Amino acid sequence: MTTDPQTQSLPEPNFGDRLALAFIRLARILLRLLFVVSIAAVLAFGLYLGVPRLYQDFIQPVQEHTAQIADLNVRQDEIAMSVEEGLSDFQDRVGNLEVQMEIEAEQVGELAARQEELEAALDMQAELDQRIAVIEDELAALAAVTDQNESALEALSEGLEANDTPFAALEREVQITRVLNLIARARLDIGQSNAGLAEQNIRTAQELLEAIRDTVPENELARITPALERLQLALANLEDTPIVAANDLDAAWNALVLGKSESEVIP
Image 1 (cartoon, rainbow, N blue to C red):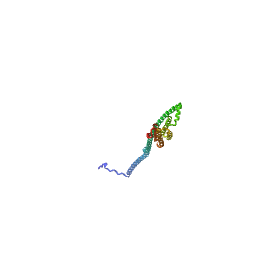
Image 2: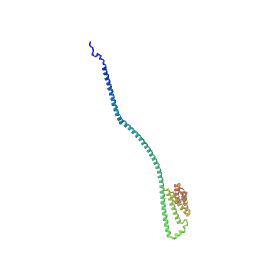
Image 3: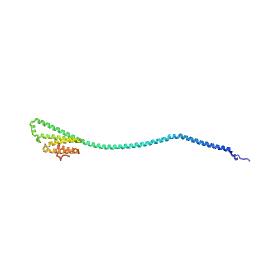
Image 4: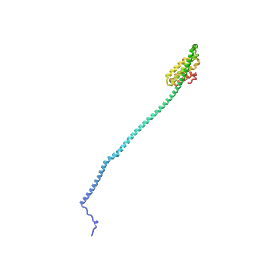
């Protein structure tokens, strides 16, 4: 009877074969372990070399950029605060400039008003100068006539004490013209804020008017008396209300020039 070789049972391995087989298996395990350890060592070495490079190339720049951004934020906050402070200071300066401009505008208005007053006073002074020149010419002509006519001079000399002689009237006009000149100067001094000189001119004008008040006819008192009263009021108002004093001087001027009574003089 024949047997199939495939159906025949294999002979059981002996101890030596089993030992060799175990050794082979152990060697395979050791080789695998060594391979794993080698791979781990290679990876560890790669990490040892790569981590610093990775930190230097990626992490450190990111940290530096973060620090720079933080520093930029701090600088931006400082710049913003500085800009706010500068803007606030600029707004304060603009406000101060606006106030200063308003003050200067008021001062310009006052200067313009004073300029008009000065121009009016200068016109008045020019008119006085013309009147004085005319009167001086008349006096010169009168003096020439008196030199040529001694008899007329003697007649006039005898009537010098009379208040209604032509020579006495002419002398009064000369004195009144001087008073008008002093009033105009005082008016100009008030416009130039020179109260001391204005007071001096007003007092001199008063003295001249008082000197001729007792020598004028009664019809002339209608302009001498109101003018003196207005000059006294101008002195009283000169220190506290110079504008009112200037109006009083204008009233005194009108009283002497136009011969108006006190009630008719514009205050």
